[in-house]
Image (cartoon, rainbow, N blue to C red; front, side, top):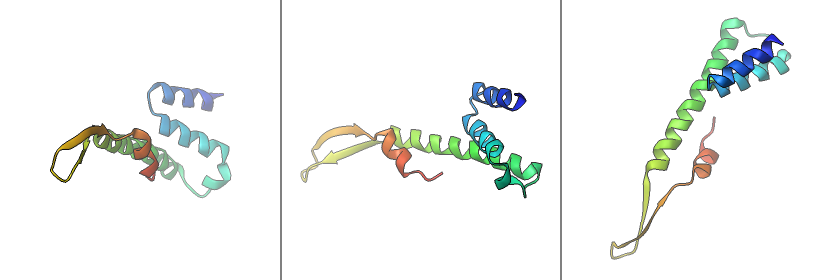
Length: 92
């Protein structure tokens, strides 16, 4: 019960990747048996960092406008890049 409360607290603190990684470690203890506390905690923190960096990159890319121009340099239209395309190309 304490673990579930910890996961909910992490989610409320907007640390979703940490919550997911902690939950994964709880559900698969054999996979993390050889890791000590510091290593397991490091994996949890790294997951959150990676997710935040991926989100940051996605925001930067999404703010970039793609210009589609004809041969005579007249732009046909502006289009923002869809976030779903960004997320599908980022490997976490």
